[in-house]
Length: 67
Image 1: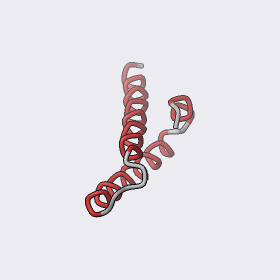
Image 2: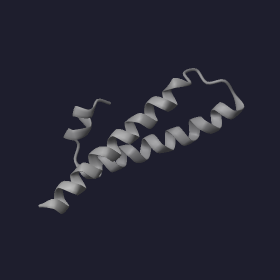
Image 3: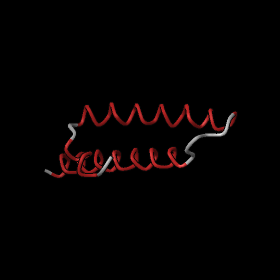
Image 4: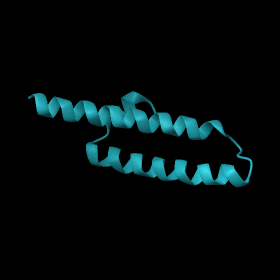
């Protein structure tokens, strides 16, 4: 997911998507311990998307507090 797509999402949808991504990262980490993953880079990519989402949420919160 690109940053422009993330910025266009409302806060509630952003939090919901972030929750889904965090759950999938959690599940994949346990799957990786037992079996070989098809795409081990997918966990890292999802973690980066979660970080982007947190950044956007923090930017919005800071903008609300400053005004």
